[in-house]
Length: 349
Image 1 (cartoon, helix red, strand yellow):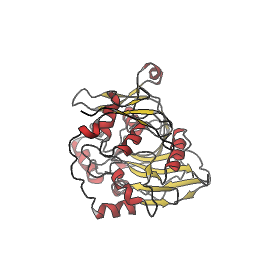
Image 2: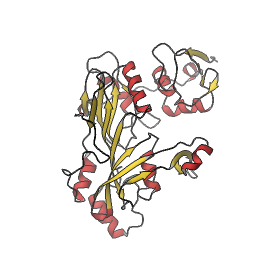
Image 3: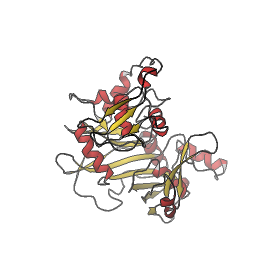
Image 4: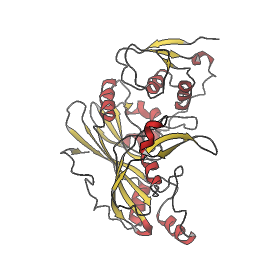
């Protein structure tokens, strides 16, 4: 039986998450396995249990479990269809020597898992565009969420962009279709969030708690979302612009569900329309695909990691959301460019 070993965080490998560092070292491990290894204490940092999201520093020692020699023989890697490679290249909305921005299609997972054979992480080597390094993810979107996703083209640029996200120097705006009319029409949602086990079927759910309970609740974190009504549509559906002031897992989906206006097509946190008469629901289904999540990362504003100029990246709506808005009577040409206040001068890509 092989023994655990210690690996030192090398120069240039600091200021990145432990799970991402492990994923590059052991690409055969799914994210779920990495999280389990950390939770059980099989992976330790300087001898201590840590969460997979902890940020590394150069010179720290990571205890590596004996998983390489003990693992089962790996399954043959499935080849990626040429059509999928072409599709991800076509999704590029900005590229320069330091960064790439994609309009991520809905349904594409960002990272692999036990049920994911196709994911963005596996497509990254096909987005090198002449450089030696494979681009790196600096933030994430849920599998069913579409829109702006940023990649760094080197480790140094990834560290700079990660710091920008962590210090909340970026500005993200999402578009969503929700069930019912929020009151007030524009406002702020500040419920705390905590991960809990589902009562039935297992698995984790993100739940809301009173902000005053956050300091007293293990694992809870503050969360802050601004929302703005772009348009009321027919069938009592509302088009919202959302600006997350914090970047918590499933934050927008959970916050909107908590105020009674879930995002259409959200199978995990409530698809909505449950109280509608069957006839009305059928009419709505003719206009909107309730099997797809109607959440889109519309824009991302950053300071370019090299030029330090403001850069505004915008992603067109996916087909199912564009179709839904058109069918619900919305004029896509009359959309406020800055619903949460004026943006600094920036280039739209």
